[in-house]
Amino acid sequence: MGRIRPEPVKLVRWAVLISALVPLAAQESVIRVNVRLVRLLVTVKDAKGGLVGTLNKNNFSVYDNGAKQEIAVFEHHTDQPLSIAVLFDTSASVGIALKYEVESATRFLHAVLREGNPDDQVSLYSFNWEVRAQTGFTRRTERLERALHTMRAEGGTSLYDAIYLASQDMERREGRHVIIVVTDGGDTTSYKDFHAALDAAQRADAVIYPILVMPIKNDAGRNIGGENALTTLSNGTGGMVFTPNLGPGLDEAFDDILRALRTQYLLGFYPKDVPLTKNRLHQLRVSPDRQGLRVITRSGYYGDSEEPPRRR
Image (cartoon, rainbow, N blue to C red; front, side, top):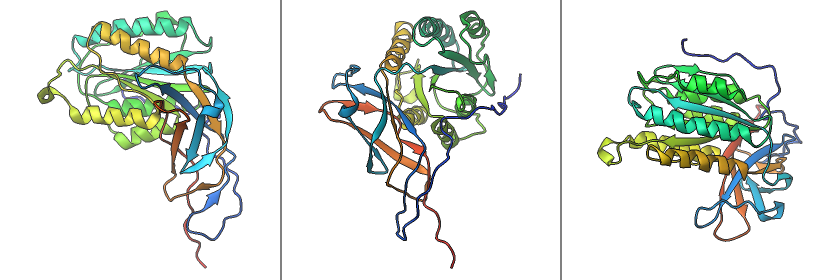
């Protein structure tokens, strides 16, 4: 199977950019009202790193390009269906680590599909010099296990291509979108670059959780650039980076992701009176009303932009 190019899906996606415009004022920074609901998946941690799942709507403040917004939708421990894409690095450098990754992922997939929303589904991808969709989205654990055990390590690392294509596949699916990337380093063979991968994930409202398996801990043998890229991808989409050792550490990373998914809040707002810029990427900030809490959510979304001056 060659490099995949997903077919268009005939469903309406959450992130469709349809907006209602109010009259524009003759000013440098345009203010616009947008009827599109912007959804944020939010994880909250305390000062010790523990998950906090007891907050309510009044404990959050949301800002879009610096303008405070009214929270129109709030779900505590949201149970909206999950679409989880698990991306496995199968490049030559993975080697024996792949066996342990497959074993831990198998336990994780069983846990995901055993509990939670009955509409939760998982898809598997592998990436080396090419990206392969091993399965579509499914709840059939035997199909997922069979695909996991057929993967072999060889070739380069097309990490950005894998994120780009997985994001496109889940863009039009309803509910929550999650991408888990299991890898040992950075990209080497992608056609798409870092910015295209991040752009695709943000357009799909996908949260990226990299699991960075590092058999080499000393700086001389590490891919620092790749690690920084994964951290930025995670921060930009509201995820978290995990750096486990092989064995129990991998299980703990998958368990932590599952706990985070089960304690997520869903916040939604309709952008109003938002200062616009020429860049269509809106900057988001969510603040808790208590000291010592850390909110983890995506840093932005694609919406309206400032229109260029009209010619007289």
